[in-house]
Image (cartoon, rainbow, N blue to C red; front, side):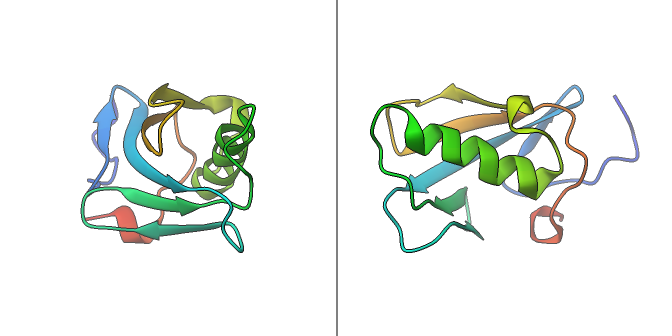
Amino acid sequence: MADDRPACRIARWDGDDLVVPVRVVPRAAGDAVLPEQDCLKVRLTAPPVDGRANEALCRVLGKLFGVPKSRVVVEQGAGSRTKRVRIVAPGRIPEYLRR
């Protein structure tokens, strides 16, 4: 575990991974990530059908954290709008998540 990792509001470190609470808004006008007080609100154009919203979520968060989408794992809430997502060894942390 690296000691020079930035402290993150909202998210927590689990070893080298970052665990983030997420609230998904499917069928939005555009893809966007908005920090809220207790989670990340992720607006997705994808509908919540056949896992397409979860796939889009992994793609969007992968770009945000500088990792391939395969390193973004929906740990809890795959069928829900409220999810817990693990970012495996993130390449970067957005400034608005830092304390």
